[in-house]
Amino acid sequence: MKLYYATGTCSLSPHIVAMEAGIALTLERVDIGKTPHVTASGVDFSRVNPNGYVPALELDDGSVLTEGVAIAQYLADLAPASSLAPPAGTIARVQLQTWLNFIATELHKMYSPWLFHPEYGVEAQAAARAKIAERLAFVETHLGTCGSFILGEHFTVADAYLFTITSWSPFAGVDLSGFPHLRAYLARIAARPAVRQAMQAEGMKVAA
Ligand SMILES: N[C@@H](CCC(=O)N[C@@H](CS)C(=O)NCC(=O)O)C(=O)O
Image (cartoon, helix red, strand yellow):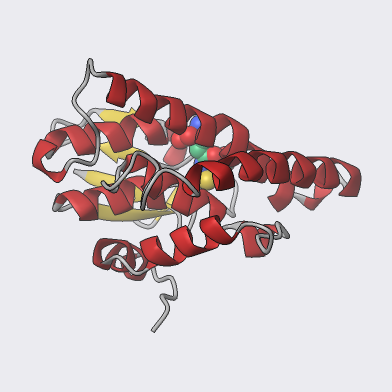
């Protein structure tokens, strides 16, 4: 399987999941800074994902999965013993999907595009930061009571996703100083060997 990724973007989330699950992936970098987006091997990425965004997962039969939360759950389900996602059909799985949808729609798409595209203007960015602060307050309250991870004591795909998105905060001007539980959670996740390996494989800096 091949994961199309761009360093440090939301594609880091399924990359972490694969590392946690012990699933070997081929990686192909996509330059999303240039239009059209071209992959490291010179392919126009719109031929892989017509929407032009990472992540995309090419399966061994040539078919392509898109949308980070779907890819992450697919990978988790390939390795049920890793407990990265509760079994389908359980309330715990629905709780996982509730969090994945919350992270995708209330956080991911509030950080990006608003905070990474200055052309939206300072007013839109201030509004996005205010909304993110509200949502992070909700996350902070949850992390204060849930245990080590979002669903309790097991690291799941939701943790890979929340870690990936909220780690953008320093680059996006989002102040995490009022969220001590979130900061401790991010440090805990950043120390996981699989997370470090995924980040290193993408050429990111990891803490010593
Ligand atoms: N709905 C998609 C959004 C993915 C997305 O926003 N990807 C960004 C990186 S975090 C991207 O590739 N942007 C480049 C572009 O949209 O052209 C998902 O959740 O997988």
